[in-house]
Image (cartoon, rainbow, N blue to C red):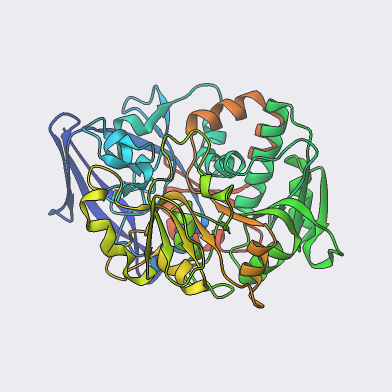
Length: 461
């Protein structure tokens, strides 16, 4: 099979150019992608060809030039697609993993964290062409057929599922008062995820939206917020969990001040914040920060199927464990991962016990030569030092936890939205503010950067 088309390709100067593409192959023998008649990318078996229908523009797309992945690229990852005959609708999960392709799985798939495989590609972000093109190749298990919600709502499934992952990772308890800081695109989706979760699970907790702009707070009310507050006028207000969606250091600092039990960091700006240089990578790997305690030594994600058997302890730490630990300089600990003890398992420590900010950063990214963490994805870094005046360390030493999350389960997201019709209708009415033909890609991208745009959607004719 062969399809040929012109696609808007994102380039490093933050613009789009039209480029000729050819997809040649099939799902059994693999595909070859040609760009301007030259070989561009080879894909093995397990990919299906679809037609793009809708694709949302998100903050990741707007910041794509800052990400460490090659350009030019057909971007766009919030995709609704159809079968080639147009009769069936699909939402496309973005992680291109062994499991998604239905081929032999790697150790990350077998360990229950396939989306963290270092061999994965990411739809519209890392190499695999995305939904701003007319045709799209998706791993067969990443294409999820749906009919329980409308295609116009389904364009929000990818970011909604990511927000639902935040709620699942940091679930409110009965009687909690939780807050979403900075509700805009992602934040208002998180409000909707919390409200849907609350109704479907019948858990009584209060949801507050915190923003500097009244118009955003009005949207938050319609999406399920029980109360709203101007974030610049809060007075001694505290919340059990704060979900920070601001991507700013000022927002992060405020979240540390107003969170009682937990701060869930959903997005960052790729820059140093509060003395930590690797907070973005912490979110990418869905890592957690907390203080050292006997209870936290047993930390793991709900339903995770492993034990904390490999723990690295900073030589600067006063902590000494009875078993399962390696005392080391954190800067040298990566060498331990090369030993036979780490064969036939994820080559990461389950936990890292550190004594300062630098060791937190090193646990997240121990080397500039690669993007592998010292701690397994969804693992934890436990702080056992003095807090001094650093706000992050003070928060940890007060018993606070910093959690993070990334992508979510589309099946769970579809189910939740189908169960909560009013919230679903309000998402389409109030969150999607602008729609553009795919012919006007540059214009749509500029509009997505303006303050009056919340969610901009590209429509393929």
